[in-house]
Structures are given as C-alpha cells and as structure tokens.
Image 1: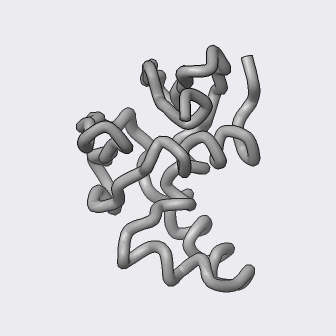
Image 2: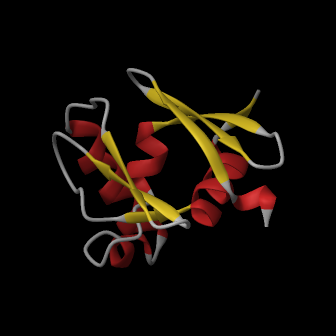
Length: 106
C-alpha cells in the first residue's frame, strides 16, 4: 500500500521528516521512535503503562543523537543509535502509525 511505503527520510538533530508514498509527510522526534522500538528487548517493556513510563525515562537519560539508517528489504529500516538499542527493525507500517500518533503532519 502506497500509504505505508516510506519514500524518503530526512534526518535532523532531534528528529526526522518521513515522507510516504501517498504524499504525506510528518516530522517525528527520535524519542518517539526509540520509545516504541519493536525489538525483542524493548517491546516487552511496553506491555503496560508503568513499564512504558520506565522505558521512556531510561531513553530520555541517554544522549539523543542522529542515528544511521539502514534499509531492510522493501518493508522497513533499522536505525543505528550511537547510544542505546539498535536492534529494532521499524516497518514502514509501524513508522506510519508512529507518525500519525506522535508526529506532526507537514
């Protein structure tokens, strides 16, 4: 689906602009991406509100830096953070959902 196809990512210092195949563009902060990581280590820490708050507090203590981006097939990207988790694969669908819930449409 074009709506969920990431066509471009523009990395800034504290967030990125994500452009999708349907023409929609969003500004999304790195904090939102990191706190919603789907890897085996981070996903269980999002099971309930208390654990999610603890994960967010932990991530906020880390130095937030621009990640490197690696494409993963035709369905996602992997963000390599200088600090913290770098094992999560963010599907384009997941990124679109994050943009709609935590981002700002441009």
